[in-house]
Structures are given as C-alpha cells and as structure tokens.
Image (cartoon, rainbow, N blue to C red; front, side):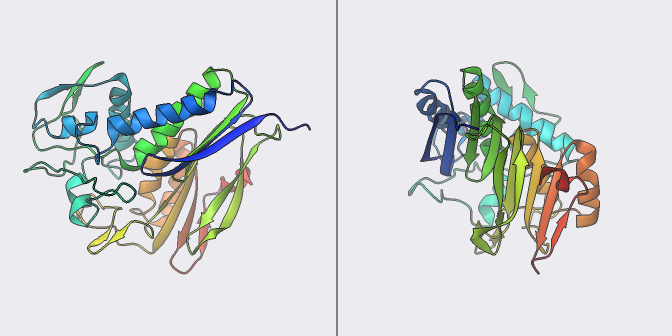
Amino acid sequence: MVEQSTQSDCRPVMGGESVITVVGGSPKLLDDAFALALMCEAAWSRFVADSELDRVNQADGARVDISPLTVALIQEMTDGFELTAGDFNPTLLPRVVEVGYLASLVHEGRVTKVPEGARVFDTLDDIDLDEKSVQLPAGMTLDSGGIGKGFAADLIAAAVMNSGADGVMVSMSGDVVIAGESPQGGPWLLGVEDPFDEQSHVDIVRLVEGSVVTSSQRKRRFAQGHHLIDPKTGLSASTPVQTVSVIARTGARAEVLAKSGFLRSTPEYLEWLPSVGAAGLVIDSSGERHESENWKLYR
C-alpha cells in the first residue's frame, strides 16, 4: 500500500514534548493543531498565572466566566470522578503541591499558586457549572494534570479530522490519541513504554481509533513522594505498581481510568476495566506484567 503524505513535528507544549502527526489534508493543519494545544495550555495550566483554571482556583467560591474549552474540561473531570468512584479526584492539588510538585518541570520560574484554605473534597456535587461559567465551593481547587493532556489530545485529533485530514496521531507527553488512517493506511502501531528502560517497549498495540495512555509513579518523584495521590490518605499511593497503561475510546477517559490502577488491587482493577470499555496493562516493581483479558485484542 502506498504511504500517504504525512507531516509531523515535536514541540514543547502541555507540560512536555508533544508530537503531532497528520496524514493527508492541508499543510496548515499541523500548525493549527499545535495552536489549539497552546490554547488549551494557556487556559488550563496551573503554572500559568491568570489562566482560566488559575482564576477559578483563586476565586474562593465566586462565580467565574470561562470559555467553552474549560467548561468541557471541568465536565470531563466530574465524569471521571463518577466513573472511577472517586479514584480520580481533581481536587487533590494541595496534596500534589505538598509532596513537592510546586514548580513546572519544563518552564523554569513557573510555579503553582495554591490559595490559603485550599483542601481536598470527597465530592464534586457542589460544583455549579453552566455553558459559560463555573462556581466552585470555597476551598476547592482543580488540577488539570493528566486529564488535561488526554482531553487536549482528544480535542486536537477531532479538530484535525474535522478539517479534512485522513488520519492523525496526537501524543501529549505520552498520552496518545489516534484517529483515521496511519501513514501506511492501516492500524496505528503504538509502543507501550518499559518503566525500567525508557528506550524500550513492553508491548506494541494496534489501534484503529482511540487512545493509549501510560501513567507512571517513576517519573514525577519528589522529596515527599510522587504525584499520584491516594484520595483516601492524601499521600502518594503506596503500591508496587510502577506503570499502568490503558486503552480506551478517548484520552481523557484513559487518563482517569489509569489512576485506579494505582489504588485498587491489580486483579480487581483488570477485571473491572473491560466493564467500562477499556483494556489495561500493569507492570509491578518486579517487572512482572499483568493484563486485562481483552488486552490481547489490541496486539
């Protein structure tokens, strides 16, 4: 099969190196895709003073006007909280900062401003969200974190395809979303990173559409722990699980489902994932791999 025209680039955005590959379509689609990524970062980053999410977090219970982009992100957060029964909790920002994740790892000088009195909430029911504004309870802050990367990749992939591309792959610091045809015309072949060797893969998966996300406790480690916080304890999750990889229909969904892999027993977690339309691969501290029954469908 003849390879289609392909354009690809790697640029620093969304907290790390992001790669976007566009198959077919207009030459300007690649620049448009990165422009949307920068728009998401400017609206959602906790490291950007006066980003929309920062203004929401500093509002201390007041209503804040926000863009449709941020409305959609907060809706994804509440959906993820419900789907995982609170394993994914976007209000953990005060605890994430306490373990040491205060400053941006890629933009020197950018730090998170956590308002006084910020605390963790065990329900999101009191978030008042409409089509153009949001009101959080006093003391609640939201962290876009991984779900922001996954959801940005979803939005970019959809925008590129809606603009006439034949296929697209968006990788936001490892959160991968694909749609349409690969450059070779068939499924996309995506490597799953080895937690003990970043240059190697523990598996290769084939996707026609959807997302594969890998979350790791080995990368963002600080003096007081790692960034994957257990909502029940407020501390870094204590688990032998090193990485959790999830295949799901969207990057946002894969991100929130990956969090549960560090909080639930591995057998329970891998049995549960297919019931919510996902597949998973867990690598523990001994290097042993554990996969859901449906993971093999993607090899």
